[in-house]
Image 1 (cartoon, rainbow, N blue to C red):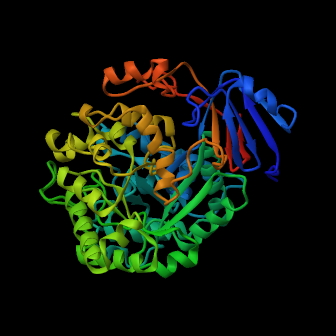
Image 2 (image 1 turned 90 degrees about the horizontal axis):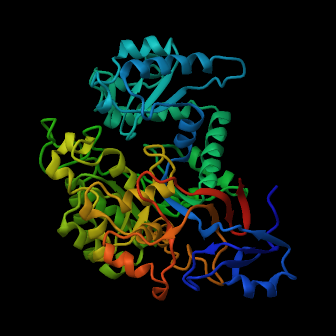
Length: 538
């Protein structure tokens, strides 16, 4: 059971991050809305009407985070099952796989396909993934699916391949063990189709519980026929509808899937509607070949197909969206959206704020096109933290010069492109403050943005991507979705020290946020409240 939402709660004795009062130390919540923010002294007037008084003891209150790109079931399976993220070697990965299989066969273990995630051969001394024989030896006859860290390629044991008819004839089946493209999509569908309902429920609950514990009040679930299933999305939306988790807004990534999106209760026909793949799997679509492979990746959709989808969505009044990482994929998206705008009118296209997920390889011309077409950039700063820099995976794939141009958050912000931050969990972990830090301390200094701008992209930005400009801020009348944090001193951090110096002066009226300098501990979530209901209490 969740608490009733008609209660009046007074929080006092802390810091409230609010544009209504940059020095606020107290907040009053009535039901599911913020009623007032102000000083502790003024809060005394509300003590008699409050059903509950929360003594903050110096804690920080902020709007709850919005993770604008997640895959809840897969993220939950990584939390409850085998997570190979950070595994140091092939040998260690095989040992962990074998141990996971043994544990999964214990008493009370689920009977479905076993699923793991997170392997990344680029950091292993062996420099390669397991061979089919090595994987089968570790799996010991189990049907096992292991997605690469970017979820655009995978390993599958022989037992799982047997559950995927016609697999060896599909593009992306090379016989080397690693599956990409259509072969990967087929084996992933087979794996998820063989999950038990118990496995699915436990994974989804684990993901949403983890999100709540991190101060996340809403997530955008990027579902679709090649990444999950209709059953998976409807089960997740049903779970979130119980009211004791973060809110879930579903996207359905199927070409021409307007009616399916509406039938499923999705807010858009997009999300992971793949125009290309990912850099780590050599499937992001590029204009010029990879530095370490003699090809330009994979194109899943043409500009004409994109135009038709955007036109259909615009005519239906439904937001469209596409997964596009490589520069050639982004060119296809921009050409397609522009063609749709020519057909139905630029104003109608811009009004729906169609989305581009990831949008990594952008140049100045592409950034300007985002502005022209009213596109939202749904981006993941943790990608740069994980794979950026002169020695990172991006540099391996593209060379240092091209890699340094990826994820240009500052250019997008300067141009006025709406930013919505997310994790793409399980590709990178649910970690909102870590995401803000990654944007503020981008591995390429020219792409850095202020902590305040990054925080806004991870709170209001997620709501603006949904067309809800009024949400994601703590002011009277706003939805009471917020988080309470134990943290150190509050500061203003920007890439320009002159701005930071003025902004921390009390005369500037700029509210502070936690110091996210690398190496410092991140804030700890004490409480998460969604529409007046507490969904996490430390």
